[in-house]
Amino acid sequence: MLNQNQTPLLDALKTNAARLHAPFYTPGHKLGEGISQPLANLLGKAVFRADLTELADLDNLFTPQGVIQEAQQLAAAAFGASQTWFLVNGSTCGIEAAILATCGTGDKIILPRNVHSSAIAGLILSGAIPIFLNPEYDSVLDIAHSITPNALESALQQHPDAKAVLTVYPTYYGVCGDLSAIANITHQHNIPLLVDEAHGAHFAFHPELPTPALAAGADLTVQSIHKVLGAMTQASMLHIQGDRIDCDRISKALQLVQSTSPSYLLLASLDAARQQMALHGKMLMSRTLQLANEARTKISQIPGLSVLQILSPPYQGGLGGSSSLGGLVGSPSFMTLDETRLTVTVSGLGLTGFEAEEILDEKFAVTAEFASLQHLTFIISLGNTPADIEQLVQSFTTLANEYHRTNLITSSNEQNLLTTQAYTLHLSPREAFFAVSETLPLAQTSDRICAEIVCPYPPGIPVLMPGEIITKPVINYLQQIQVMGGFISGCTDTNLKTLKVVK
Image 1 (tube, rainbow, N blue to C red):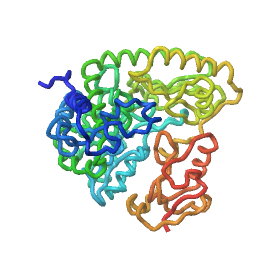
Image 2 (image 1 turned 135 degrees about the vertical axis):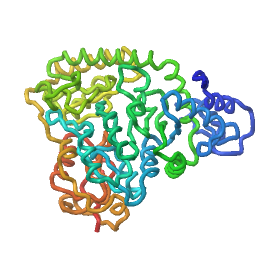
Image 3 (image 1 turned 180 degrees about the horizontal axis):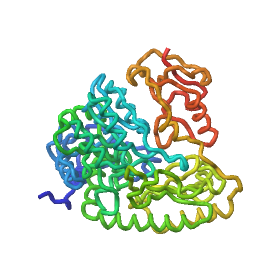
Image 4 (image 1 turned 120 degrees about the vertical axis):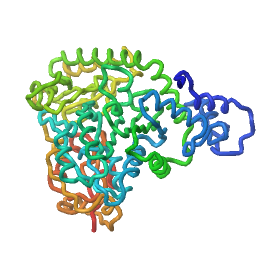
């Protein structure tokens, strides 16, 4: 029986940081002695004594046989996996490795069109061919949700040679589709289910949270421990269970996409975050849920505002807003909501989400996770305090009283592009990415093949990817995002005056 009180990697790092010795190895700052004074003033020197490399007592991330192996075994037990890998390049490298380990050049993989850009990177690296499914779409709230079991079954009937299925669970808004049904359908076709669970690392630690992906039947899941738990930024984990995925291929794929000089600060933060949740997770999540529910209740009572919510299933009425000001009802394809994720619809105030985000940040020192045309989304985690919630509620109260306009913001169908438009993939993402390209003014790119990833950020869902035909609606949408205050990432020209296309 593993002892979840232990922190083998953290303890080894602490011991080595305290050891008096003459360092003739990387990193060059040598236990903080060479760190610039401004940086030392900001962070203190203690952190740099722990910024160590692969010393004998600290194990090796790619061939773990000591404290890293022990820490990963403890993490696997805590999160319900048969094997766990620590990631220092974020969930991005985990998603890339998952695709590389299950798909080769020309292999088909089924995935939702609203995947994160890391999945597109995985397609480019592997040469896999995407079979995109349109997720369910709430036309009132302009929000894309999960793929449905029926859509997946239809896709697998049409593409019986698919090598894997990848889905997002939860979405950036905290909405979870029927993953158990999706897993059952995937396994009926004897292929693995890969899950981008970047925002669901906390699910395993409280019964009122959605079912964890592994418990729902996923073969592989990638979690950003830094996004919702207590690890440092970039620190993530990849978990697997069962025998549908070759563990050796995962290890080899991770060697391609992870740094050969992993940060032991990040690795130790994973060890510490695992211990924290294994020992105190339920208590911490109970407190987090209490804070989130307090915020949700109070903000929903402010005139002009509403919050994203899900009615208890089963519901047979389909998707739609519960009122003209927003909200969410259930759908025939069962959905649940991560109650720690708070999405507030501000369109009833006559404000865009981008405008409201700027006001809250600049006037009230309240910073959202991200904004869209109608909404602001907030991550409420174990690190938030009652004072944070009080400040959040008060800022929305003042926003509604002092910034309310008479005109209402209505749907622009911004997410509809990712859910109803028939995207045409003329080349594989890999072929287009490495093809000879040319740069043209944006207005001249319609009907050309895109050669780069174009991604309004956040949440990092590509609107265009290499190999897709550029259309006028997509161009109009991207320009609208910029006008509304959003910004574009992934492409060479972030001002979006030009775009790379296949020559």
